[in-house]
Length: 317
Image (cartoon, rainbow, N blue to C red; front, side, top):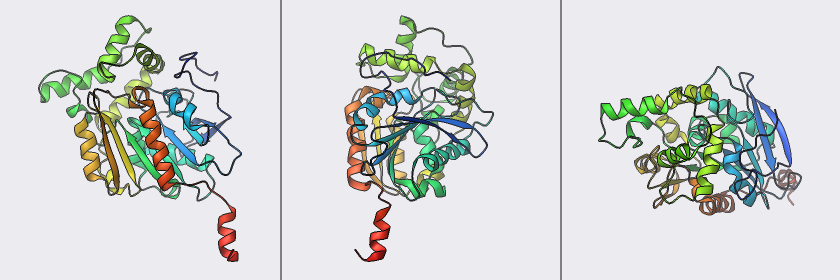
């Protein structure tokens, strides 16, 4: 599949990877994986990026561009998104299977990485929390603009009081089968209202719109049904590695109440950051802060994998 062109220049233009590969999930689903940065440097710590609903690896362009200077950055397209083919299986178990497959395909046995997930990518982390492959490789996690349950009921996309009517309207809006069509001025205004803060710069809004509009409507609808029924509260309680949480105060899709619930339930929460006036697309809206949080987690909890470490310990060196 050819490389999609979302934005051709500037900080949100997806950088070219140093290596590309295909990871095969438990059910045979094929996942497009990119590795950026010094791929042959054993001294470069690993970071894994999992994007959200209707997005792709391109969503992490700003983080990849910065971190790849001195990290091995692994980004992959969730099934049906970007260059990963669609699959009939759409479930939180499939998300967990896919993350395990990517970790196995890109990290050495026992190698640790910081794993950052945005929105559905954060839910992927929660879904995989108890999996052996995740526990083997996760040093710490960053959960950006995400939640574990009651997503539709607590969304504020529809500006009215909480209740059955708002939940019903939200479910039908987010689960619409209608095509998004071209990226027009009206489309930009709608996307900005639903997913970004009021002060978001036009180039940020356009970058997000081009990524979201590229997601096939069948894929968008199929995953909306999973999000509608989401209940990963048990996964949060099993997420034993250090976890930092980031949310925008103007996030309408996963409002701060979701982030606060995560922070309260996580066994080892190492920080909740609420960003005034920012919306759901925090890695795009606050790229330096999100990248900085990842760097902090790497510096505190992860280090480069060195296969000679174990040998030196056994030899008493």
